[in-house]
Length: 128
Image (cartoon, rainbow, N blue to C red; front, side, top):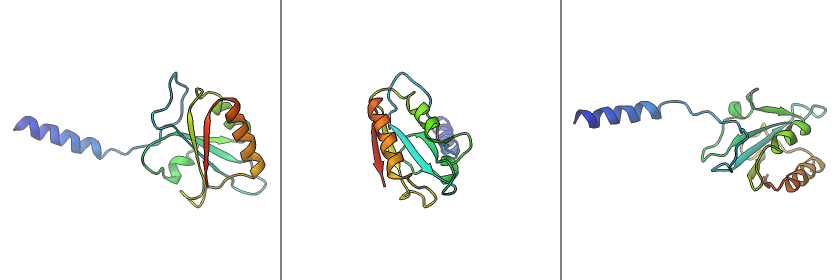
């Protein structure tokens, strides 16, 4: 009985821990749930910002998405990180439906990133 109580206490204690979004790091295999891509711009003349996070079944908070440690500024920095993903990786680009503060860049920028992903053999899906 004591063993069951201890196990239950351990399970309750570990589920109360906060879960933070995991940054994407280079690996030899594909991510289990793919990779999530988010984008936003602070102003019309500002560079676009992006974040690449490991896919999960839960909706990320805006604080997780826009965390300075996760933020990639500009398309060149995004492409640099996309180029580190293995061929065949699923990338889901989630638009403003998740958070009003997020947005998608102009069509030309989206096309540029999609073409880059195709060249890298990434499976990029844009969800508006």
